[in-house]
Amino acid sequence: MSAGNPLALLAWLSPAYPVGAYAYSHGLEWAVEAGDVKDRETLVAWIGDILRHGSGRNDAILFTAAWREARAGGDKLTELAELAIALAPSRERRLEAQQQGSAFLAATRAAWPHPALDHFAKSAGANTAYCIAFAVAAAAHELDLRPALDAFLSAFASNLVSGAVRMSVIGQTEGQMAVAELSVIAREVADVAEYSSLDDLGGSAFRADIAAMRHETQNSRLFRS
Image 1 (tube, rainbow, N blue to C red):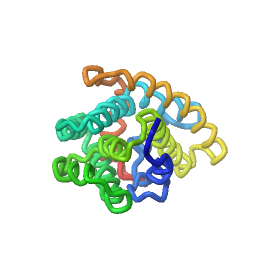
Image 2 (image 1 turned 90 degrees about the vertical axis):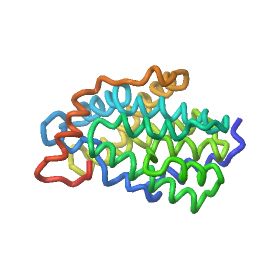
Image 3 (image 1 turned 90 degrees about the horizontal axis):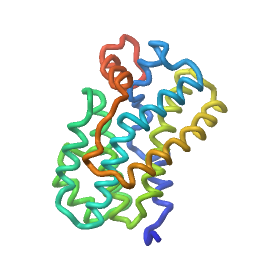
Image 4 (image 1 turned 45 degrees about the vertical axis):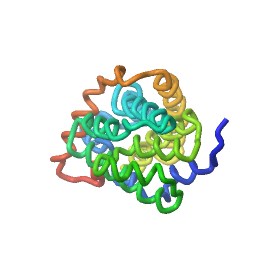
């Protein structure tokens, strides 16, 4: 049972937490322009594939490894942070991971301080991938792996759904229906990631990776990725 404050997860994943997640679409903006995502069904399929077969899956595996390393007081967190950044398939994905990670770490060190966060910030430098920074914070504040991982993946999916709502792909009610559907997928991914190792890293969501690359030269953009 977690000895930490579970309300921390609500604070860290609140839209009010200053990580700038609203500014990134993870390539979804290009997918909408290209016609790959045009309604709730195609949106859930797109985000679901990212969770099951793409960066969402990899982030879940890296999150699990970082949480366990942090709880064990190990010295491999810097390597995990470097690996997480190296796995970014495009410039914008790298920016998304680094800037959200740096913003999360800065806000959490100020509002929810812990020596482990200070140590990680110094050792990781610019390689502050969001999934690693969040996992380190969860471990430092004695939050159990599964609630933290489930919440992290669900928030990732919710942010992309919010982007689709702002692009007028779907309305707010359908957006919440999509979030509910994706929450089931997020738990399925967490179920697998909980028992995975770094040897299981990899992905096959190639269309989503291409979308992230194409977004870099998209003419009209609302989002940074």
